Length: 214
Image (cartoon, rainbow, N blue to C red):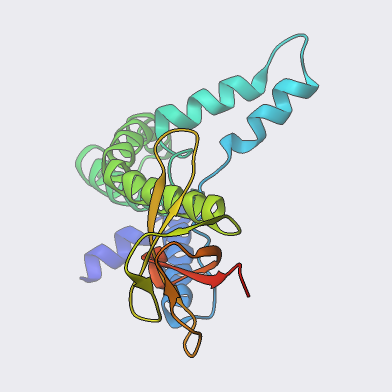
């Protein structure tokens, strides 16, 4: 344990150790509720704006978007990607320097940064693939919620009350069928009644509605 601590505070490892400490501190504060974790996916880092304002010449925005997709930091929140790559950089640096730089040579430590980054970037990409699917599903759910709220439809279940109900909303393709509830204390809506979606329920599993006939 003492050897690990000494290696962690060695000159060629100290910067990464400080970054790792910041990452651990950040997630501890998130767990304790002192900080909010932003789950929104990056919007291609303003790539559309870059292309719109730089129609001529070199488009650095496109290169940045390509890099984001290649390394994975455009598919998950940047704080998640950054946490993983710092973690991998720290571990890989420790392993490479212990194996190939036992004498703590500064030049050799600097040369080992290249394979370190390559290994860490690939590892981060692989480990964030399932995480990216999770955040994409969350983003799709949020998009669906925004598209449904405020729209009106027809109650197609026997009735819609505070415990159960289904609403059919007309769409360009097949009608959209969603689970709905009325607010507690509100009158039940019979089949065929017109209702408007007012808000989403917990975890977007259903939506609250109110009658359009009142």
